[in-house]
Length: 369
Image (cartoon, rainbow, N blue to C red):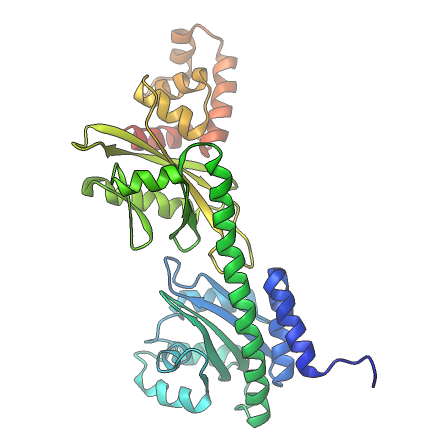
């Protein structure tokens, strides 16, 4: 009938839409599932600091996705689908015969039990991308649907071509976002680094390039920002990991590093967490690291002002709290009312992301030490 699209055209359009509107990925995966006569379509990322950075499955209970992480479902020693993917090239289609060869080599039956619980024993899959990790496309078939036939395999092959193109487009757009952010920061004349959701540096400003080229407090090693002095590396790594895991919008954290040829100078690295995107491959900007020399005044005050945007009065109150002084003692020392101190503490709590004085003390002492 005129005006009706062919199944291939529907699939192609669905994935083209997902490439530029990531909120549409579930629609595209459902179109693929329908075309193959399967209940569920899946796009999964495996690898990187989160191990399973995303796992998008149509018509799947939230509990199932949480259970997948809990059982270590991204491991080839646990999951026969992941094991089969390691034996396949990018673009090569694997399905039930490949699973049957992988199952006897597993170190545990826990994923077999998982598939039995959620009724996904059969399927078809392919790797769309393989780098430090992989992005896999799959349909998950129920016991009643059974193993894939030739028609389902052919439909999946068509979908995989469209999905691969969509993934490449979204990759490019997410990486371009990092360069756009760096370009904006360049106008601010600062040494800044854009870190994506995988923890890699996706872009940096010219001042940032100069800083890491000279190894002045910071370096970029294997695409990741690290401290130039070995004694600082674990602290910076942990600070970046916390920033990547943070769910708060525009939260601030940071760390003081040794700098200069002899390590006698100080470099403050402020970490600003950007809002996460629900349908991202983790290449969007997630953290901005800004490195600068502290201004010539009290080390604690500059750290709190630069890191949390505290006012001078708030910085003074926060430092007194870190010394263990009570609200009454702070009010007396600063010659202000208790109500003023309480209002300042409320603002300090909000800016530093804590809710209690004990948590503030712990956080400030960790930073100041």
